[in-house]
Length: 328
Image (cartoon, rainbow, N blue to C red; front, top):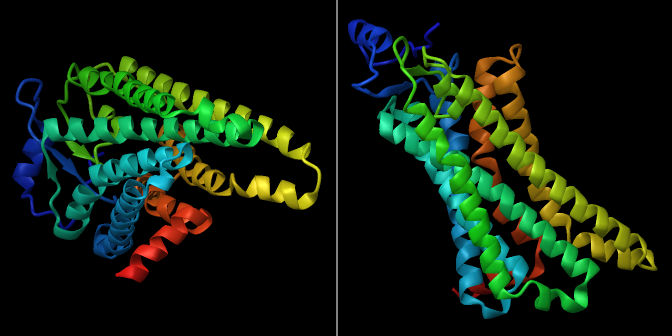
C-alpha cells in the first residue's frame, strides 16, 4: 500500500507514474511522506523538531568553541566530548533540514543519490556516536580505577588513534549500505513512508531480492550495538567494583557523580535507538506514525540534550560557559 499525503501537490497521473514505473536504469527521485497518518498536523510537529535542531546546533557549537579556546579543557574527557559534539552536529544536520522541509513546506522529493548519501551519513555517524560513548566509558574507567596514571594511559596520541578507529569503523561498516542498494530494482513504489531516507524503509520498496540487504543491516546493527553495549557494561562493572571498595559514602557518591553525565547520555542514545530498531523489524502492531516520530526524535533528541547534560553536570564546562557570557 502506497502512503501519500492528502495535501501533496503532485497530480494523480504523476503519482501513478512514480508508483508504477520501473527504474532500474533511470533512478528518479523518491517521495518522502513525512509522518504518515499525521499529514494534517505535520506543521505543528515541525515546531518541536525545529526547537530540537536549534538546540543541537547552539549547544554543540558552544561545546566545541569552549573546549577549543580553553587549553585547560584539553583533557581526555573533554576531547572525547568535542568528538561527540562534532558527530552530533553532523547527525542532526543530516536529517533535520530535509525533515523540516517535508513537514513545513511540503518539499517531499529527494533525489536517489541524495537519499543514499543521507542514509549513509545517518547510519555511519550513529555508529561513530556509539563508538565515542565506548571511548568515554573507557575514560571514566581509567579515571576511577587508575587515577594516578590517567594522563599517562590516555595520552593525546592514543586519543587521536581512538578517534580515527571510531571514524574508520563507521565508514567501513556502512559503505556497503548504498553499494548494496544500487543492485536493487525499484519497480512499484518510490514513496517512502518516512521523514528521511532510512535504510530499511528504502529496502522495503524494492521488488527484487533484498535478503542480503536485510541480513547485512541486521548484522551491522547487532555487531555495533552488541559490541559497544558489552564494552560499556564491562567498563562500568569494573567502575562499580572499584567504587564499592572506596571507604565512606561521600567518597563513593563523588566517584559515581563523575559518571552521571555519561550514563545519562548513554540512556538517551541507546534506549530510543534500540526501540526504533526493534519496532522497524518486529513491531508489526506499533502504529507506523509512532515509529516514524520516534525514529526522527532519536536523531534529534541526543544531539540536543547531550550539550545540556554535560553543561549542567560538568563543572568545568558550566563555569567556562558562564564566564564567556558574563564577559560579553
